Length: 382
Image (cartoon, rainbow, N blue to C red; front, side):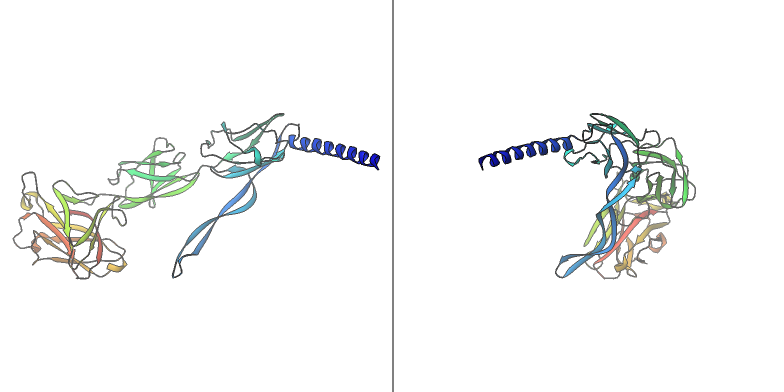
């Protein structure tokens, strides 16, 4: 009996040693030169439209939602900030993974002899000038595999100037703007000047632009500017407001909320004035005073009319505003708000009997329907 126990113990020891040896061998991986057979995606993003999201028991919100889903697909071109699996053989002793000259971090705990999981950082260079080679170096050699990085979509952060005339140069700033192949103002092509960089490019404003969004196309796709570029309204003899108040003009008002640099609805440039009458007949008041405290002499400046552009939302469609000058409420000129559209309003100075000097222009709720909201842009004297 004792001899059988000894024999059993001996056999058990041998099996344990053999098992440990076999585990050690598998953990060390293959000792040959590494190979790469393919690179595959681990996941993809799907956009699901009109997803219902519960906010409270009594309310919901419906909007598109992007979801990450498991996805196995062989790729020959990657994207920045995206996770991939490199598949091959003899990969367990990998020391470095280099793409276009930049070393990529990988987690050894997620590595096997047949796969490496990593995320391509946003610092990897891209483009035809790069070697576009994925180089893996292990304890026993290295392998080079063809793999390029797709340029990310362009982003327009801003452009300057925001308005001008045909032939002017506009500088567009943002990211991934290099290798730009086309720029257009709405549907009008523009000529690119010089060589675009990742963060900026210059274009010449084409003829025919009035109030247009800018589109930039690169190998990564096409992007649209948030704000529109415009051509200054013609024939202004004295500007009142164009993204900001002109010299000697200030904006105020009564029983209104006023945003003098609003970005929601603009006719030209990035800003407009948003006015909300919080009580009936609330208004925006614009006052003029020169360095000597005097008003604007209309005859001397050759001014015959006041011009402004008026915009309204669905709630204000069909409502009215009215313009008066120099605090005289008894004489005003009404205008009708059109929801979702800018309309140009021109008010002759002759509408106000005996006015030779302007010290104040007011645009107020003309319906008595507070709260009432409207937007104003391109205000001036003609």
